[in-house]
Amino acid sequence: MKSPRKVLVLYEHGRAGAAVIDLARDLAEHEGAALTVVAIAPQAPSGPRCGNSALEYNEAVAESVAHDLEQARERLGPAASAAFVLLVEGADQTLEQFVRSGGFDLVLLPAHRRLMRPAGHPAASRLERAAGAEVRIVDGRAGSVSPARQRRPPRPAAGAG
Image (cartoon, rainbow, N blue to C red; front, side, top):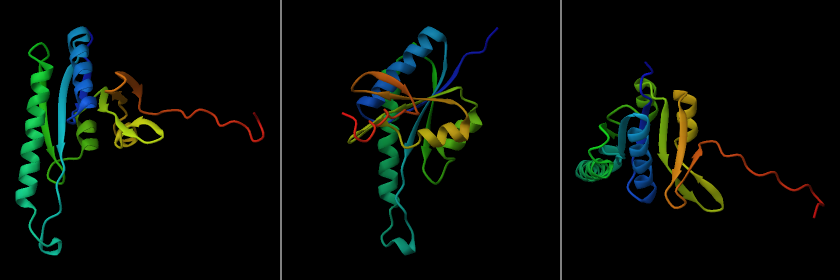
């Protein structure tokens, strides 16, 4: 019997984050995929060389991201059972380490819109290299899914046209 596909879902608040959760729910319902939903709480540097302490700020950010993760749980719904993980930047393992240690087959990332470029995600290429998993970027605006590596259209030859 074939074991279910292990899917890591990086959740970020916003339209693309919602689209990632919707796709993950479909994979769980139709393919029986085992889901792990991860959110990352960024941390500001704190210490004697950084001036004021950022401890309270970092705690507030972590609480906000934990709340976002709870919203992802609600959106995913009861139909798909999933593990939910909050990674605190600098205190827990990196996303790349987490993906590698979890043996995931597929990683779903929410698209980041970039001016004059196709939507992408800053962690996509690092995850492909580090984990060897298939990485897909989910664009919430277009509702499309694309592989992490986007081929650029060829440039017209000089003097052509």
